Image (cartoon, rainbow, N blue to C red; front, side, top):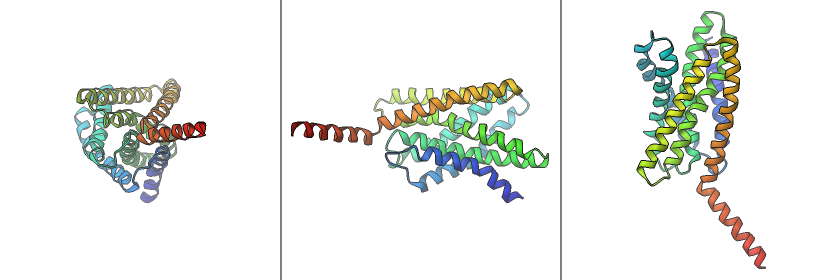
Length: 236
């Protein structure tokens, strides 16, 4: 039964990782490095959980502030201290891919713990559906906010501008995570709020993907090639 719970816990994360990965149309990242980042995201879930322990009795403070801040920074730490410094991180879209990988590793471990607990209380199906549809993709949407900022910052020469981009990306991600957590506390009204929230969050995600692809040097090179071809065709 434990094996079946592991499959259920990791299936949504693997699906959403594939979904984000296939968005990287210019230069897909090395799969080994993406898997490594996913595993590091899994590992950072434990220290994040330990850091949340002192806030366990703080109720809404844990849900709306402590957990979002700790979890988003843990995932950011994994990416910024590992793959961000490698040569394969060579275009803005990479920030989105690797932040999603770390987030989904984190979410998959979190998912497994929730499903084990739910199985013991015979509420496995609703917990699985709720987390697969809302919570797991939610982690992607939060983390790719700072991931997109990290991808942009890597190719900005001004250190002050880099810090502003990354800091603002982290703050927005933490705020979005906190709002999401708050909405889960308000029953049917909260569920409606979550649907509206996720609609705009997905819209924002796809805008960041398009922006990252447009800023890629592959896109610039393709643009120059097409421009040169058009100029050659018109001159002939």
